[in-house]
Image 1 (cartoon, one colour):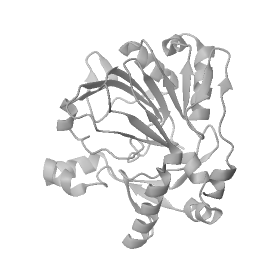
Image 2 (cartoon, rainbow, N blue to C red; image 1 turned 180 degrees about the vertical axis):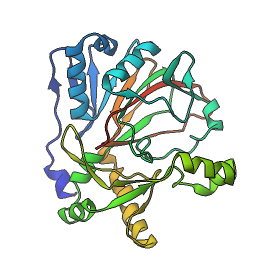
Image 3 (cartoon, rainbow, N blue to C red; image 1 turned 90 degrees about the vertical axis):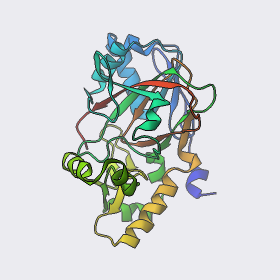
Image 4 (cartoon, one colour; image 1 turned 180 degrees about the horizontal axis):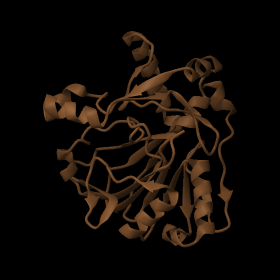
Length: 293
């Protein structure tokens, strides 16, 4: 076993004035029980405690919630500026509440999603998201997050020093450019590249609120390490992709109707598990932005 894992002190439960945050892994993620998050729209003290728990645990899970689309938007607005442009359409009458519904979405661009941080290919990546379950399969359809603070902290000092000086190109077609070309054609791809050109970000970033350092690359979006040859870049990225998503850094959520997940998109990666065939799965998502680091 790695020495870093042997010596780690697991995170513990935190008692806030209105709820407890109970860890779901040894490094990040927490279940929040005993409150309806919608109450935080008008209760600023409750909201500030939820926000503090979000910064500390990075991913929060709320069960048995009653949340209307307008309330979900209002919560997102308390965290930051609502992100209105996304890869799926908004709910009619509620711009910024994205509708993710299967099996229809299998026909769209999300059929082979892998580990990623949302919009890392933009100059200002998504800050965080609120994802709310309306209908889910009895089994399957889980979502998994990976803790990029712990992934960085467990690297050897030599690797940490090496990575701190690197930057990476994030590209929204990095994972499978030929499939994109085949599906949308060269002209449409050219137009898309004008709107969403590749973006360069540091491989190791410092969180603007917690102050912790985290890895900011992902299998879906990371194209190449700047200043390296192709084989050198591939070797570094392949190592990071395998390391940053080890089971020790994962938190997996099995959804039920009324479950809400709130996650930090800077310091975590996530991916959906598409193992539910043609079963119905309906989620509403609100994402928000703040100033990038």
